[in-house]
Image 1 (cartoon, rainbow, N blue to C red):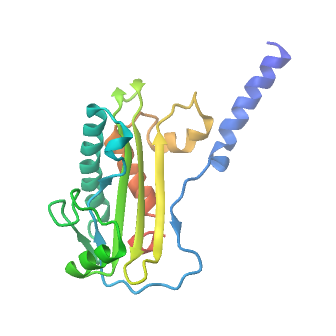
Image 2 (image 1 turned 45 degrees about the vertical axis):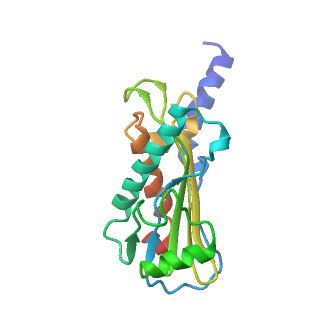
Length: 211
């Protein structure tokens, strides 16, 4: 074995050892130095697509995003189930996909209808299903969503976060070691990846029962 080969092997092992400590973090962001808001209720709006028709998606891509929005909406109910003060708005309500909340006045109206003063909005911009099995894929799952939690009095943002991941193998990125280990070193489905993302991001917001 040449000295150069030994050095390469040593570098690879070193990266694996320190990966857990230097992996990049994409965390939810609580509002800094803001006084705590008294929450009478958190109104959770249906997940909607962040992609507009003019963005030029194919019919298959649009359907995947629509299906993904429904999946993420169901996962949201699971992740937030049992937390106090949560009110879910169904897609058939006035805040559904045909009439998304896009201004503070509309948010106030919807919040008042459901007995809350804080609104949780979530938008999905990418949802790609895994092609292959747990241990080998032609295409890994990919999910991108963003959320915003805000009070409707002044529109002050209490927490926000963004999850954006296309699953990678350790061979592609050594920094994925801690996350890969927690997932059992398997490739997740898009639904499993989305659940992981929701638990991570929403769990970082104190208003949603996080740390």
